[in-house]
Length: 275
Image (cartoon, rainbow, N blue to C red; front, side):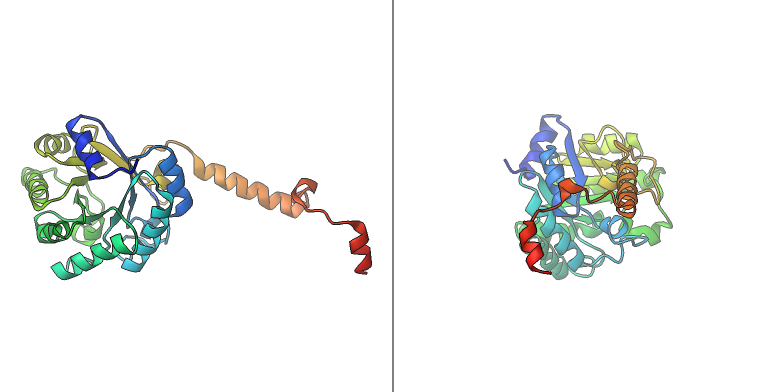
């Protein structure tokens, strides 16, 4: 049965944890879906882990639509949430609604996610009013990395903590069905979770959030350019892949692959007639 915004709200009310992972292609989405994950985030993190950018700022709407559509084809039950990339919603309400609509209509997303607190509330309200669910994103918001001066924990001072709480209440009032809290002190995330009626999804925000999200390449040990403190590697898939690639190359060079069982047969008489 397809997961929806009601899945998030029911989990919040019943104190059941929500599971979320990223995916960017059909085959990975199928695996995540079959594993029973509640929601798949097609994150603009694809800029880092798929396209090789240093940040997420270069990701385009076309990138997001392309990858979201692939994921949607593989996700039969998981709710698909697509990131709105940098400058797809900040400039105007019109841009925000049009681009959110494209992610749903062309990318077949079930919801969109955008970064920002009070500054994004008009966009959140406008998008939700046309029937598109919005997940908010607070704390360390990667699209603002230049303003933050790097990847730093957010909300550590009294003023910063109060602003995060105020922003969380504001995006809820604007109509967001959930909010991602990234790189936020655990006790602050717990307080925000307690005060909100909508679900909180943590990434580097501790144990008390209503759910958790990770980039799948991080949790599988496939992306080691940098590994945030909050990442747990649940498997060393990167090393397994490298060994398999290496074994393949060795067997090709040695002539042991393909072996007899990997080939197709034809009658010798047919071949002889071709000489």
